[in-house]
Amino acid sequence: MSKLEISVSPADDLIDVPRRIVVRGAAAGERVEIGSSTLRAGVPWHSRACFVADAQGQVDLTLAEAVEGDYSGVLAMGLLWSQTPQQPGRREVFHADVQEPLVTTLTAKAGERSADAELVQRLCAAGVTRRPLREQGLVGTLFLPAGDGPHPAIMILNGSGGGINEARAALYASRGYAALALAYFKAPGLSDYISNTPLEYFQSGLDWIRHNLKPQSDFVAISGQSRGGELVLLLGATFPEQVSAVLAYVPSALVHSGQNAADPAIGREGPTWLLNGQPLPHQWQNNRTASWQPFDEGPPPHRHALAMLTALQDEEAVARARIPVEKIQAPVMLFSAGDDGSWPSSLYSKMVSDKLKEAGHPYPVEWQDYQDAGHSILFPYVPTTQLSYAHPVSGRISTGGGQPAPNAEADRHSWQQALAFLQHALAAHTSKKETS
Image 1 (cartoon, rainbow, N blue to C red):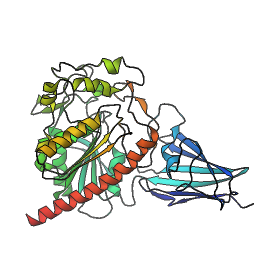
Image 2: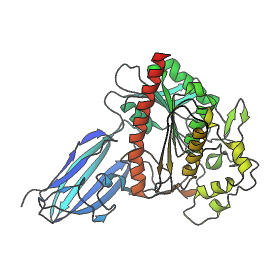
Image 3: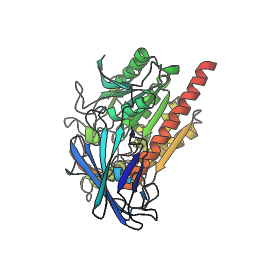
Image 4: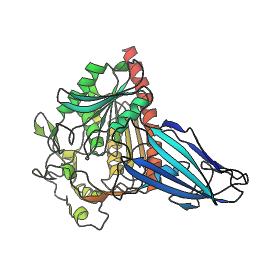
């Protein structure tokens, strides 16, 4: 009987690169089980799936259907996104040091025979450098691509979990962008809460990028997710001359209160954003229909979006809180989720898209709506199984919505779309600069 073998191609590459996983040496029609194990932030994550070898005794995951296990169907990277943590409740899928690769061991078994292979995923390409930023009141981490540049730049903002999104910044740098992951709360030297965050802080971040990095063609994009998605639309509308492109992941069309990330002393119905020292009107403010009851008292897993929907019934409050996206002077990319458990990002994205269309927005507007996906849209080939979790600030347990397979497809497709969007935006921006 032939020796059982398992191969990965490419075996070692960036995390967004799909792999071909092939088992050879099985008997035709033999049942083959493949398991995966990855250490993520000190915690083992595992998955398994079973297949039937073809007439040549092979199982090629780009062609073979998983007939049992943690995913079903023909999904080449299913063994990665279907992983679950050995320690329940853990959600960290990257190491604290994003320069450290994720190493997955794949084990194939057929009868009494077995074979192993390694699959290595990296966030940092060769030559990418990391530099903590702690100056001019700014807190973040800068990742620079290999080479002297100049490079186009992007500023990356997290959502209501706060902190510094080093993983996304590292991957953007690996794809050629000078990427500043800028924290605005829950990071050293900053508030633990989102309440009363001044927008001028982000304007300082944009200024710092331009002054210190001198980006290619003066191109500075901004990308944010969830509350960060709300924020990048707000920044594009508030500081339009400083923003070259906007990528808003599961955003809001409205200014919201502090919600789950609020300072308890201020409360979840208190203000989030300040401009010139004054709080911006938000959706919960003087809202006649808003109620937390559907979230607080609804059946588990609790869906924060149900409370958000009550607030939308007060049209006057919605009008007061609407982000004036028509003031944005740049291309806009929207990503939304039809089963978003955190807030109705599909509805919010439609509001943004409709307003830009109504205003005759002179720049490209793209909107990708993933109907069966949930709130957590990241980038390709990371686990998507942890649907319910405790909020990192409030501790409230809720669901982001979606299911692992559609969430994984949203991760894969959105990243491809984001890179293409930025490439086109940069080309148009460069052309405009050269002709002006």
